[in-house]
Length: 400
Image (cartoon, rainbow, N blue to C red; front, side, top):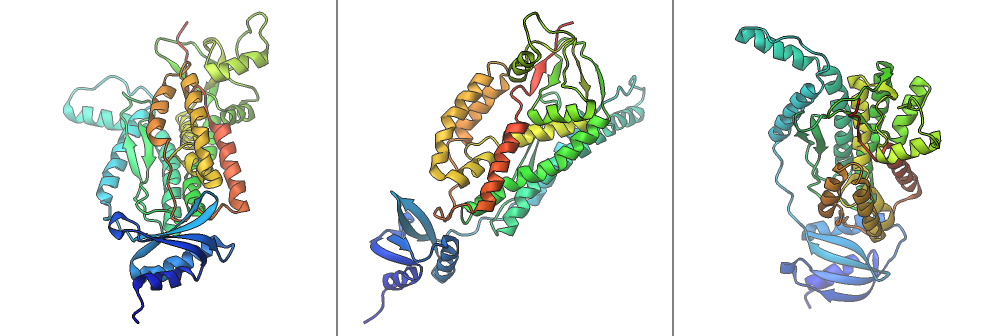
């Protein structure tokens, strides 16, 4: 009697799984079979590797799932590898972003425009190159962040593209860029892999951003905010406040005086969350371009660590809490809407989260949980989000 393919697959699955029932599917619709039961070993990560390796000759991918508290294995047709991305696109976007960031980093008045085409070209090149301290600092932070993701993806053999940088001319944004992103072309094997890839970027970026910030603050100076039409002051996060305090020995901006009946704590609590009252007349740090790059690095880290959907923070939260992580989305969405009353940019982020924040990456193995060391790093990532988040990234200082 000939052995059928289903019997072969049943035998392979039984090596790692105590099968209680089997439901055959339709390969054309993406399901070959479903097995309900329990893994023979508590080491679900190793069980997945064993089963995946055994099924490769049959061009089948196993999926580990939980269904109403019961372990389930799905067998699905193995997807073909995606087409290789074109590195030239990444390079062009990187160079355009570098140009925009150099432009944004111009920190000195180059003087009157000279006569003659050649002299004018040199005038613009000299002005552009004066932005190198900001550009070098910011691009180093962004490169560290994105290659943290990329190299961790390579480490776990999960296909991913090189970073795609997003240029944005300074006439549209004072930063010169909207950051960068990699695209995961493969599916992470389990939640540990998803977590490692997600958290590697913010941690690597912070390793560069913090020294850049302190070096930049050492090059900065204190002065009184005079204000002016359309002028903005960079907002505070807890970490940025601490960095300014460690560098200058005081909480900044420091108001010249407090309104009657207002305590220093009350002033700071209100200003931190609302950007009000206007800091015109207060003493604050006039940051060097390098310090501004470090501040941007903190802001980028916080934005990426918002614990929702396909953002880095969403990967961290989902890897730790699984499907329960989706319960946090309504609270995050409402918090951004509330903060948008004081800085309208959060309304744009709330809209983006309706697209990015309601779905999450689903690993092949959803049974394997984070181990204790990763849980500790996840808690650290959430702490980093709290201390780098700026409720009001830019505070209006128009006035005097």
